[in-house]
Image (cartoon, rainbow, N blue to C red; front, top):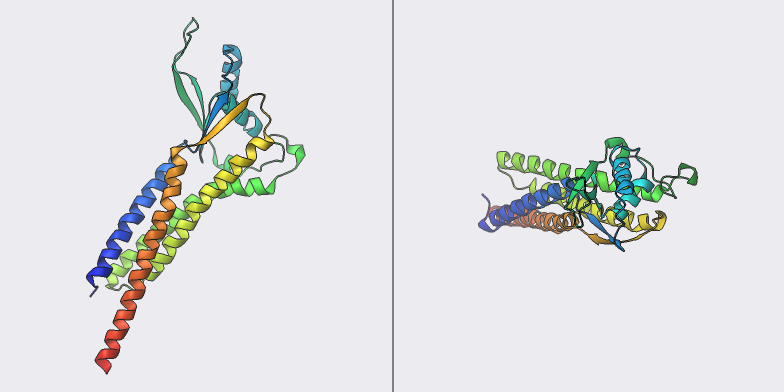
Length: 251
């Protein structure tokens, strides 16, 4: 039998774990991790803008090119997406204030594991191992976090089938590791973004701001750690109570 206090802790921990997984999944699938706002206002050269957009969508994967395009066209960056703002409709006449829409391109799997260079886009400058591993870490760590939560849910189901709370200790440890992976994702992304403007040369200055997708990923980490704390407390407290009860019966 499980005491009501422990059962309540398990239920609350499960709800926190579910919320954290949903937040992290939404954050990974969206592109609003970091937003660029051009300063001063971008030029209205339609031909130049169309060339930038065409190269951004169909051109070769070049960190320098797509970074400068995002700087100039108010782009947003995510873990799996890079986006720019383009006119939503094209007319034969030039509108003074055209409506803007987001145009996104996904990072392919080979691009996620591509090497980063000391000078973005310049292979002769040498590989920047720190930026390379930060980039790969921000891609792999959220996947590891979700996998750990999924594994912990399997362990929890097995614990329910066995009618034992002992495996809950392992569930708490897995959630703790998942929370650290979520936190590591945010840290790797912020470090990579902070280093990129110092390497990329842009003719116009761009202001950057954190997006809501990053905040969702940041919130998921403490939720997973709180769930881990509840699972660990329930497992250890129940074990102590069971040991004392067994000793009392023997005595």
